[in-house]
Image (cartoon, rainbow, N blue to C red; front, side):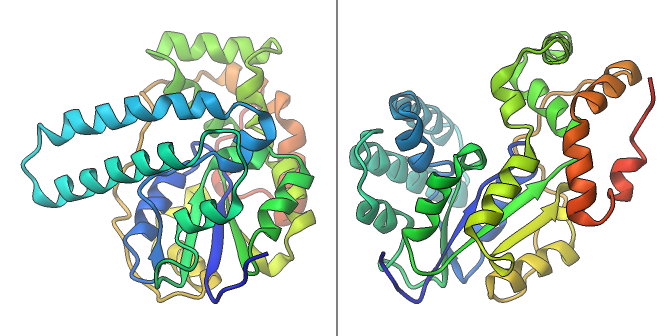
Length: 287
């Protein structure tokens, strides 16, 4: 275990629950440092043996950024894109997707290398790790905290399908497949009960912060997060939209069926929070 005065934070999900907005907001915070490479997939690559899949995507990400870089004249945007391409290339050169090197990983995220109080890794897929791997994530450094963003379960699921599909018809087809017992990968990402139970096993309550997506884009929520991390309170671009899914409307029948399919999640969250958020109950429908 490497011990320094820095806090290592993980944002372990949930996917499609505001993690990109929070990453951008904390990236700009003067007390924080993050590589521009969001979603490192270090721990899940080692655990699942699929690091090659993520690594093979990195050259295409660089090419995509370079294409946008060549089209913009905004100096601030170009500077960020240059840093992003360099960070991705460094991660590609450093991590082969299968060889564990915790010291190199910690160096990459900034432990002992930068002055920032907070450094970290925003990879929502970590929410699906087995508890023994979550424990290794926590034990890699002497001061670790985690943030988990909760979103109304059907809204999160529907957003995920709209992101993956080419259009509304494709998203509805994916929802129908889920309701018929398919879409297993997305279904596994729709399990905050499992994620929070496992995170709760490896972190004490004061080291785990849960925030609602529906309240995230507010000064009150950002203040709670800053206080949890022990950093200066700041404001942010609360109206900024990051990685929005395609548009589409989910009919009441499918929503009701999805609510039923996810009923264990609602029941858990009701117990976990002491009641379902009003923002959720207002959307609930009956078949």
